[in-house]
Length: 563
Image (cartoon, rainbow, N blue to C red; front, top):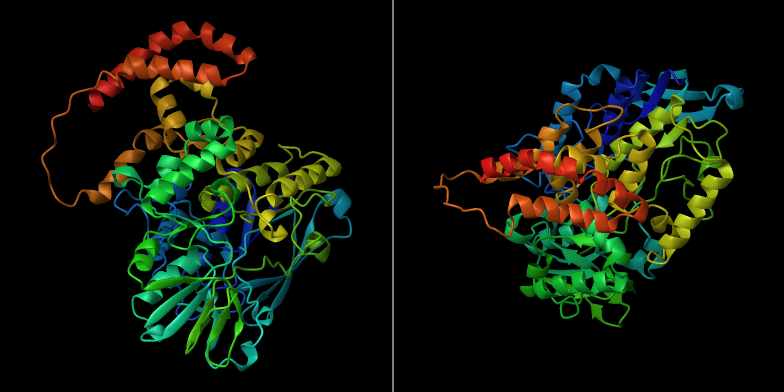
């Protein structure tokens, strides 16, 4: 039994770890180096060393229904993609609702986390902290949850570019960027086309004389808005889509998605076409970048090669003179200086983690690294699911495989990811969103049973299987079950619509379509799921057909009442 658990950091991951510990009857003690909660999402006018930093205009690239925690929906009146200040307010509401603040020690920095001499038997850790007034304290904890994030140490590779020493302009990392005021009327180069690089290039282009976007691999650019103006992630991240993508050949899926993206913006014509296929790399979420390129406000260039005294040279040999500033959006180094160096012993300096969570090398699994992960989906629900798994491992309710088995899984995952991500540090972080959540949920005992759900609650089944894979699904059953989960799923599209209702309009007269009649949806869905199941699972479905028919009345009533 872990007892007392140290939580390092009070950002979104730290808060959900505190709440999860309390939920499981453990005693969390959170150490936060700043004077407030929020971590990455707390905007500061000036960047602070060894802390995350965001720009003033930052808006989330995942919608409110997808990014929120599983038992605390965002307020319905919030816009679907929130400004950083609104997400911070959501975290404040979350901390207040679950009474988390009393467990946080502010202005306290964790200096070291080391194994106690009897670690092999006790699994305990010595934690040394330092307060802002210089007071050092030593603590003993049964377990440690590291939630300090990996956006605190910017990677600024100036030495890779000859001539930077004599360049007359300013070079800085996007970590330092706050707004475009300093770039007004200037000629600016942005290096890198991640989400931050795209945002910064677009914002600077609105006031700069000229903005150049230097990219190496290119990127598939996708907007936040899908068909009918609905959130893209809620349309794309569904269990149905996930299964279809696993069944269909990857080449076909890539072709279909890339064709759709190119119909909106020809990536080759715009100079954005990447060296990788859509499923094999990260996407760039940006609503405005193609338009700024279309207007000539952003000029796409090859990768940066070096500097002249007053300009830059690109790999294709072109030169741009009179450059005032170069912004490097070149990522971050995952750095945890307070952890034992043995844990960062990966071949490329990365943390070796089983399922992006547990160091396999530990004799006792009483330490977990939360949210050191990347996926085509929101991070906060993954961090919450990781916390729920980690805490149950700490309590001895879940067991991990042997060290050899875990290392084998780590190696297998790395080999697979290296096929689409050349950088080992980046490859190590990648997971597939829904399969990863389902894997962890299975360990915790909260993965939705689709067969059971189909014949017990067909209305909810349709929402779970064909609708967005929101985190509420992992509160329907099992440990930590939330009574409001079903209602949250059934009303998620109402919360999507709420912020748009700012002008009263008469409701249109609608008639139910025969194509989407409740009978056809119910039995068509049942047939579809049966085809996707293995042979051994088809028989129980057929045996439960009578029960499905009985419960169809509930489905009919629900659908008809919503028409």
